[in-house]
Image 1 (cartoon, rainbow, N blue to C red):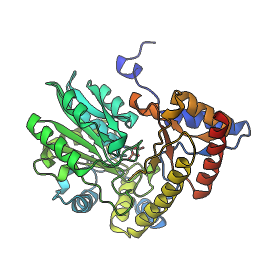
Image 2: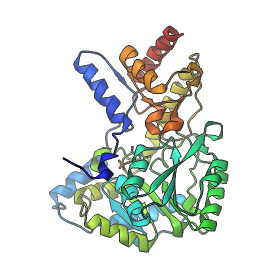
Image 3: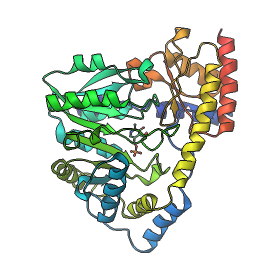
Image 4: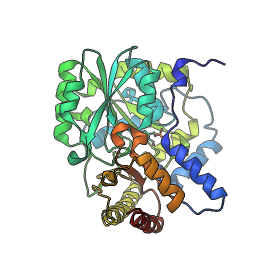
Length: 389
Ligand code: PLP
């Protein structure tokens, strides 16, 4: 059976492959510590879940507008705009089943075959997939560890060509936890305006930032809102991964195109889920802040523990829930190293190369797991690295 070229080139996400192997080991009776998963370990808050239940009981179980119910679009325009210091109208908000459709559909709406899209390396694997599905050419911009894993700006300038159409940003970043400094965003914005480029800014981790830090959005810079797609969602901020709820903030004309793509693909987002989302936005936010404070304690423990292991050097991530330790001193391909750590030490984590070639020399460790499990993971890693020496 011959499949279309566009699906033959699709690759599995590294996290799923590692999870599958870890579960195989568990079936054989091994006890595995899961530090590979990019999903909050918290349950959705009860007031949000109850709003979803109430919506079902009240019959909010129907088809609804493809771009989302008006109440939610209006609430997000207000809330997400205010947090970024921007004025956003409800028609500029498009709701979808997760943030992923808001990466995919704007890309389909903007990219012609052969257009180049600059994207971070290492970066979230879905970026390359959606660029290729849209017929575009992904062009990797290396991230620099010394600059909090922001773009290598010289490379960024060099990589822009006549075919460049879109720049994809992700801050705070999966997999590095880095937050792009305001000055770097300013330089990227200048180039985007000068060269007439679009920016797709994946800000799904923007509320998960540490030490009181505010994450700047490139969309809020002068002249940028009309050329930027902000991608955000409920999965990480409100621990709602399985509800499938995300949104984009984009210029109205592009929003109308994306709405058509939603109409003819998923139709609309689950009705009851959007009422749960409405409660998440309108309800108490202390719960989000509490989660972030817990992540921060875990981050501090994990980073301190990793830096105490000879052969590992780990920068303190400023956001998301990932550490990205540098293990290049070991001089070993990280895909082999990550497999060996899983098989021998029973700790599931990801090689940096699961996020692109520039991830060589790094591991991605998720701290969306309890402090107790993180401690156990560190003890095992410490013993593993000692044996390796
Ligand atoms: N963007 C990044 C950087 C992510 O890490 C993820 C999830 O892992 C997503 C987008 C997708 O999130 P959603 O569950 O809203 O589709």
